[in-house]
Structure formats: structure tokens, C-alpha cells
Length: 227
Ligand code: SF4
Image 1: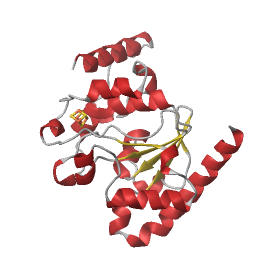
Image 2: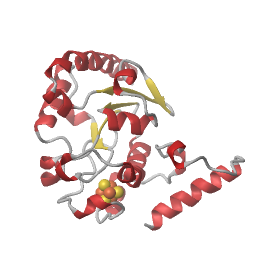
Image 3: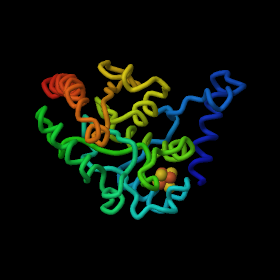
């Protein structure tokens, strides 16, 4: 809890320094914590240590495991989903259920190996019954995601589903209008596509998701050629 207040105080001091003396109504506050406002963690292990007993939001009451994320600290590509589901909650790993299997297949289709990317979610504990995370839960958990992005500093983020897209891009625009474009979060390119769990229920959207993946493959392929 101390960290939350320290982050908040730093943020308010920064706003004051740049001449912001009043804050807009809550509904207009940018939902994504800017990457500049959180102290950089030294390693994923440091974030793991910080999160392991987290009770910042009510999701801690029903979780079995916290699911921080998985993948190399040096990943150039990061996937961000919505929240752990039942299988992820049981195993403490992201995207291990049916949706995870579909994500693996989607990645294979465009020649990307899961072991080279970092995968996480907006919130790190399972919402009961797999419901959509609520705004206060997302807000409470955002400092962890911010720290993960700051530490890994991927070149590309691919968001999976509406909640991840709207959170990362700090927008209320619908998923359809966000797909097919390259967005920016600081110097990080952000692509938006469907959540694999949605695709499992809506087979007809798989071809649209494949178009998103082709764009991702092009961006990631260009990156690998350069580096
Ligand atoms: Fe903490 Fe995030 Fe879990 Fe809420 S969802 S208890 S903020 S780790």
C-alpha cells in the first residue's frame, strides 16, 4: 500500500512541477499510468517479490495464484490479455487453458515462438467466474503492468481483447476501430487484436484476427532484421 501512495505522490508532484494545479473529474483521468511516473524495477524477480502478497484489490480474496506473466526479460514483443482464467489461476501461469492453446497456434501460424515473447494480463488475479475486471481492480493492478513494461521495454505490444486495448491505449474506443492500426505508447508500437477466448466463441472472426497477426508478423519481422 505504501508503494501506491508513493507513486501517487510522485505523480502529483510531477503535475505540480509542470503547472497542473487542478485535476479533471475521475472519469476523465487517463487510465494508464504513464511509464515515466513509476520507479524502474531492477528485475522481474523484484516485481514478483512485490506482488506475491498483494491485497490492493478485492480479487485477492478469491484467487488461488497470482499470475504475473511469463517470458524472457529481453523480449521485444509483449502480449497483454485481460485477466487470468480458471486454468491460469490454478497453475499460476498466463494463457495455459484453451485460449492459451489457441494463442500458441496463432503465433505458430505466423512463425513466432511463444518462448521468445513475454505474455501477461492487465490484472494479475482471476476475477470470479471469469467476469470482466472492474475499473477499480484495473486501476489497482496497473502499477505492476507499468513496471513490467518499463523493465522489459518491448519494441511491440500486442493487446488481446477490448479491456487490454482500452487500458493500454487509455481510450474508450471500441476494439473494431482500434484494430488494423499501429498505435504508440511512448516509443513502443501497439497493435490491437481479439482475445483468443473471444475467438473460441466467435469462429467467424478468426480470419480478421489473422489479418492482425500478419501486420504483427511484418512489424516483428522488420524488427528482427534490424536487430
Ligand atoms: Fe493485487 Fe492485482 Fe491481484 Fe488486485 S489483481 S490483488 S491489484 S495483484
